Amino acid sequence: MKKHFLGSLKLMMVASLMAALPAWAGTLDDVRTAGYVKCGVNPNNPGFSALDSKGERIGFDIDFCRALAAAVNVDAKFVPLTSKERLPALQSGEIDFLSRTTTWTMSRDTRMGLDFAATVLYDGQGFMVRKDLGIKSAKELDGASVCLATGTTTELNVADYFRKNNMTFKPVVFEKQEDVRKAYDAGRCDCHTTDISGLAAQRTLMTKPEEHLILPEVISKEPLAPLTRHGDDQWNDIARWVINATIAAEENNITQANVETVAKTTTNPGIKRMLGITGTLWQDMGLDKDAPIRIIKAVGNYGEIFERSLGKNTPLRMERGLNQLWSKGGVLYTPPFR
Image 1 (tube, rainbow, N blue to C red):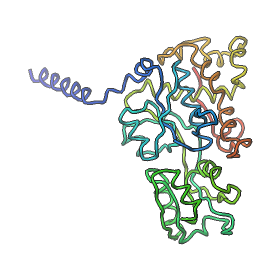
Image 2: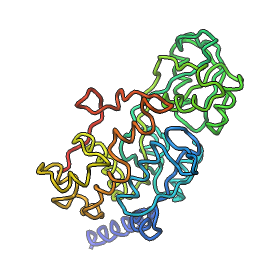
Image 3: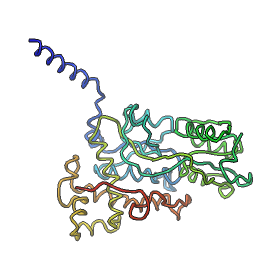
């Protein structure tokens, strides 16, 4: 009788816990019903998320939203969010997917009801100053006023850096990155700090971009990754493997232009699995077998995505660096499709 009672009690406790969990396990079905993925993005961060001359959203982060939408075979709807707004918007269900230069940290991953999908850009925090100040190193910033955005990892990183180097600084804090840039550009602070990719992006919007220098120091690790809500493993799996598909495509020289030809002619068993020609890898996640081909047709491989928005022939002029394929000296690496 005692065992029966304890068993019933355990079942009741499990049922209560399950009932208390947020009902996020149906994001894929919700997206299909709506006909679009709601993607949280930066309002204006050139190279990552901005409006082109036709009013269309373009950029590195935007392409990963489009890739996810292509995988599900729906449209992408973009929701501009500030740094402070972005995580609550995902937690509350206002958006389905956050692709907004967000650093993967332990606290965000474990305490906030969120899951990171995969790192899409290996970055680090840096400093930008006016060239006419004559500053060549961040070690020369003792006593400087520093413009930065609240609600980001930037605040803690810069405080740690100055403390570690026995220096002081005066923070000039704003909620919106646009306000940070404008304040710095207007001379309200000595330097601007954020991720180096963000500095390159914001520099393109300065009144005179050529007058600003990004200092050589990288003071933190900033692995930037899209997020989904915790508790929906299927949706997070889909987001992760959509990103991995773009990396694997570059590894195998599959491009936006040749993906359909490769799909028809390849004899490589690994490529066949990755492209959904053989096996059921994509169907096992709830997608159809043509999902990977749609992904690559929509945005191309990782290298194409990077070069189109951030690369040497764009205003940001970023080198691949760590974001080069592992076979070419970088750390970009995808688990095998098997």
